[in-house]
Length: 276
Image (cartoon, rainbow, N blue to C red):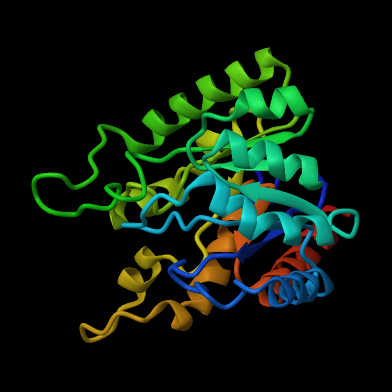
């Protein structure tokens, strides 16, 4: 496969908007409605194609948030953004997803890969992500319970293929797949998924990849035993987003929209010239 995405369509950038107090990188920054809307519009100005609004953190170790509280957090923001930019709802709850779609969201970003029927019932897009376990337990890296796979790429590709087919059969016209980097995977698993993105692209569904600011980037870029904190992982985040696009991802989910958009544009320019 060419290093450039098989389709000539421009890859999309999804901006992360966590309306939460406890997300691993930006928790609490956009909890207030006005701040959240301002940040979303800033990302749109920077080139974001989709704003992914979430009212529940799914970082490792996160506790469940009741659907009613998620709805209270996200609905005012979605209502303000709908019609100005495409909005996705980041949730595992059917109740939250349905309420968000009613408020104007047109894409369900589903880390549980279980909400295809909601998408079918409401005629919106659906992203199926792979997660081993749940946020509370998925990154237990003790020797007894660390994430384990036989062939991580093959197993996750098989899982996502099956979920995508079920969703399509239920009537979902727009189905995305996401290998779930950082969700129940070791550093080695995450790197294997990045190397093996072709296996997901070959499934024929548009692929979303999210590496932004995640812990494995800190592990890979650590020097002299010092692991960069999330706020110091921007270069690694942009580099892996560009890698994902080069391997065929159709959308990347990021906290840092402007540098990611700039990097993708610069990456595309010589490739487009070469293919002209």
